[in-house]
Length: 471
Image 1 (cartoon, rainbow, N blue to C red):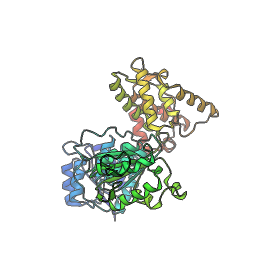
Image 2 (cartoon, helix red, strand yellow):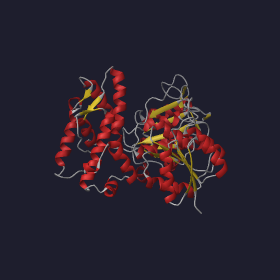
Image 3 (cartoon, rainbow, N blue to C red):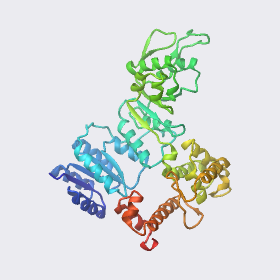
Image 4 (cartoon, rainbow, N blue to C red):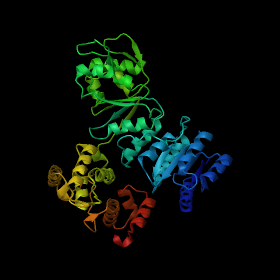
């Protein structure tokens, strides 16, 4: 029996196009142009799934999703939007969206998601109100709309209302602390303390007292009672950074806190109970450390209830323009500068460079570039020499005529200096034109090469003003 899908979008063209595609794929389709109309049709028809646009007049998609989750908790909802940001994705998944897809839609991926949604009966959990008010924001923000980062946002959205222990994995500089803060400040614990402790920054003989506190007279120099970080974080969140370097003794005590939510201060006999969410992070391979006997297996499994992996910057280079734009905005304000553009050659360098220090290194380079820029333009003269040297060496190692997959650099037509948004559009335009020439205008082959649906390719060509004669 054909599944019934409700498509909710305020644009008639989108509704019509999705109806055609879905009906060709064997679905029954009804459409609605507003949230009010969608609720009326849901009451009458009870669809098997809903495709829902986020940005609509009168009632936006998140508000409609909340009502659907309340009234029809078993109906999976797939959100669609052309505007992706961290908070929207977290809100969508936290409110109970089955999935979150970006426009222009990749129809193959959309159909695969829809098939999964109509076949898999997900456990339904009633959630609270959508994020609206937060304390004066958490310092720092996650930036990026690459598929890898979208997965991170979706996971955050699914777990923020729980107290599940989270293990964040990733290289140094990828933003593990920012993920921990995003979880805390979007959770019901947001008004309570967020306490961070760097397990490598404190000597081992002091770490126990730092974590669990001590009583007066517990050791030489303990002149007063001191609460530990777990007590300070009570009813809030404690973030244990670089947990892979804990000593066996501390690992054993941490395991007890995880299992019993209890501990004693050093020199004390009173058992202290705490209500705290634990988020841990490490740049080490904990599985390998468990095999080597350096990390307790039982502690590893207790920490790894939910695992979030943060990709290195070299694996999400499509986020570089967004990150640069964000950091330039920060340092314009900090240094009272007015940098508005970046040279094509600088962005090319950023794409080729491997960023061993990840996002943290990019931030430092942007800080220097804004500070050193003599005017509104960031040029190669503002970029550290070690970055330029590494790029030159890398290019010399390449054999003529080869392009490595991780270096998505294409020649840019036009001026050497472009605003960032225009530069991203130029990159897309140049990549499509280059593929059209290589495949002699065969759009099906171009779409496969660029990993796009043909409908998406046509939409991009129209948006970017690419004509067939460009091929």
